[in-house]
Length: 251
Length: 251
DNA sequence: TAGTGGTCTAGACCACTTC
DNA sequence: AAGTGGTCTAGACCACTAG
Image (cartoon, rainbow over all chains, first blue to last red; front, side, top):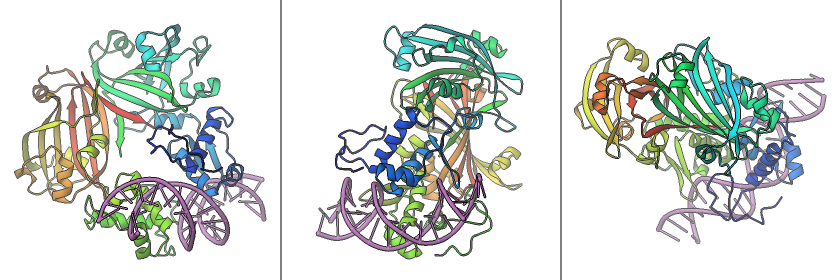
């Protein structure tokens, strides 16, 4: 693997100076492709640094830098003495990376869920805009209620591109959706953006949460992206925050 | 610098296996101490990697690893071809690291501020608990209103340990408080935790924000810590989110 | 042109896990 | 004991900034 042909434009989200692409980024890209293609599924152990280095014709240090970067993004998990593994969306990871609602007086807990409905339909203009869908595309919509300690606390509206998740509308809705996306549809959620607002609870959500309409609730608008970077899920959640809070760490 | 005397307990927040402390962490600790002590003030350029390596008697790669880690925590800023600098709390940094309120339809902007009051008093039990203060300790309380595009959007209640900020109550309150803490009191804010809730606007804050009492607002409870890790500021902000949102990136 | 950080290599040894 | 990732070193060269 040589660096004699630097691609003119960068593509990994960061601003490359256009004209130089480090070797370790090319290694990273090739590893990412294999993971995105399902060559190494979640939970799979990767070859050792030395093996990857031999295959790609680079030094072990260069492979290490690529792997470290991917571990920092939670794409991989490295464990000394054991190996390097593709991250799984197990409960622990989802709990810490994606579920930010914490009891005021206690530890983080994984919520329980009840699916209220699940239908397929044509995407609205707003849904097409959020999910980068063409006109006429289909979506799957899921309504869900989640509880902590037996107390309803989140009313969710989830929208998925139907083309990525064919047949999901007819199946059971598990508590851990991201594990299902990965296992059954090969869609691995890698990062997301949340926009938070305080609003009065809309009628339907107030009923689900068993509070009066207009009660202040936290509205969380999340767009989740797959490992390839494309929008894979749009989710709006109305959260009760009288005995919970949304935890955000600023570094 | 040798690794023959591994300290029995780790102290940098992470769980060390108790019995091995890498050299680069010891380098990091020594650099941190100098920065915390004001030996290298914010904005100051550090010696080159080679110089530090020579002074500490370690290799350049080891120094590099320490510097990279500190840069990842925003303690340092590294610029190729120029050098390594102690981070400043300039507007750009505060805007991206600490001010998460973004207009729904536009770019991030730095808000304007109006100080409403600033007093010194004995700490309440709650304030002592939040800021780790002994009984009888004094605090400085600041009330502030912040605006974006001329529109009031945040009502702030700030509490500071009086012992760290003597004389602040009698001075002007600038827009960028964290720059003042660093420049005048040698207190560099390094990280913080925010707890978010949706609540009805309390009377005093509703008046400041010019909305009806009980209007849903985002309550942001922030505890900010200095570079040494001690609690340095407790801040509660009530934010209007009808045309703004709190932006949270999940990685 | 000199000085800085950034990349890449090669090799030695250490810490941890598993068999 | 074997295999993995983690640390540390030494040195070469590249990309960027500034005088």
